[in-house]
Length: 305
Image 1 (cartoon, rainbow, N blue to C red):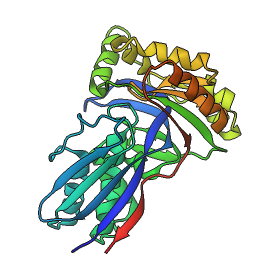
Image 2 (image 1 turned 135 degrees about the vertical axis):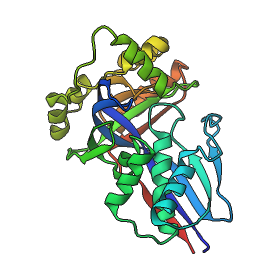
Image 3 (image 1 turned 90 degrees about the vertical axis):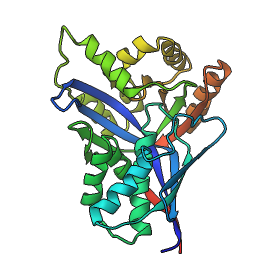
C-alpha cells in the first residue's frame, strides 16, 4: 500500500467547565460546553515498514514536550485502529503543530483524532462513525470532540459528546504561555482544594446555553466559567495578570482554557479580536493569536495515491 493522507483537527476550548468529584476510576465527572476554534494541527500519515512520528511547528511554538515515540497519541491511535480491525499495518506520521502544546486546548487530542481518521482513509477501512468515536474515547476524554467539532456538550469524563445548535460566529483571542501546565497537576490541586468541602455534581448554566442560541456575545462573555481556573491560578498566579489585561483591552469575557495556561478572550467580531490582540501584544505577555469558532472537526484535506 502506498500513498499519504493529511487530516486537520481543531483546537478545543471550554465555554464552561464544570468539574465534579473524582470517580472510582480516577477521572472526574464533567459537564462542559466545547467549542472548536480555527487553530489546527495537521497530521499526515503514509505507508511505512515501521511506525514513526515526526513533529514540526511554527518557530513560535515549542514542541519539546511532544513525545516522538510509541507514547505519542497519534501513534497510539494508529495502533488502536489497526488492532480494532485485526490488521498489521505501520505508518510514518508527521504532525504539523498549530495548537499550543500543553496549553489547555487539546492539541494532543486533536492529533489522536486526526491520526484515527487519516489511517482509516489510508487503509481504506471505512470504519463507522460511531466506532471511530468509541476508539477516540479510548484514547482520551477530549478526542471524540476533536472528531465532531462545532459546539457540543460534553458529559461523563468529557468523552460523551452531544452536538449543540448555536447561532453565528464567535471570535476568540488566545494568549499563550511560554511554559505549559500539566493537566494532572491542575486536577490534583483541584482535589486538594476540595478535600474538606467536596465538589458538587457539575452543571451547565442555562444562561450560557441561552446566550449561544441567541448569539448574544456580551451575555456569553459574562457566563463563561471554569471550575479548574482557581486551581490553575494557584499553581501559576501570574496568569491572572493576562486575564485582567484582556478585560482591560475590552474583551467581553476572559477565562483560562481548560486546565490552562492559555488565556481566552471573547470578542465581538474579527475587528474587535484584532484590537484586543494588538493591545495584548503591546504588553509582551506571550504569543497572541485569534481565531473564529465554531469550526469543523477533523477532516481530510489531502489524499495521495
